[in-house]
Image (cartoon, rainbow, N blue to C red; front, side, top):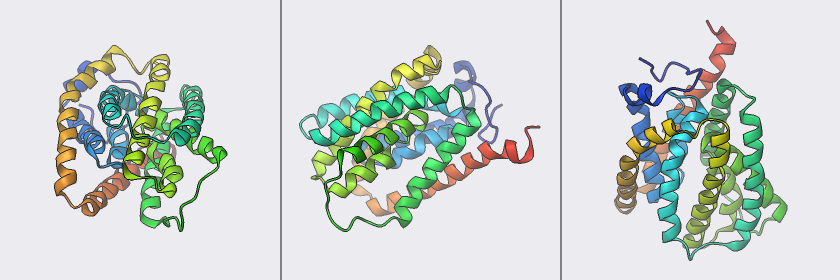
Length: 269
């Protein structure tokens, strides 16, 4: 039986995955995190790919989650189709397209361990920014060049780890957009980025029938958890919920860094 403590060195078959109960120990919380994120707890979904990457190679983990995320995107885009910021989407998506392409070019030439370390660092960076970052002193309109850069970084990290949220937030949050416009801009941006990632995942051999089969098994839970997220937003103290989520992301990221670096520190055995 494969377990989260074992570093996968190659893609796992759908039969192996679906029949392995250990898979569900990481997959179910990951899918619930996505659903809660789409339901209103933005940022919670950051833990999804790092958590699933404890079991499967990171890009395979991201490919398994992508169809689920796309289905959620379709629903969210319809809800927020009238609330979005054209200028931000223009500059951010220009950069994101370049970032997705760069990640595509690099992903085929780096090992799972390197990607695992990258995902861990992204998670740690996100949590450190939340815990120790300083809020912006005043509202400011950033430059288009900055938008292309942060959009590119978001597209790059999203392709490798579904972790494009932090770079996007660094650029958008200081602008203090109206609530619905911020949510709509975020929703549409990542819907487009996720659609762009389909071609690279196909080309890299990760977005396959097997990945779709695994995604299909998890999809009903994603839909249910989406509505659960909507319910929780109205009843759970948001501050406490996020504190717990950030601690989980921190621990998962540390585990990924350990997985990715231990073969080099102690030998591959």
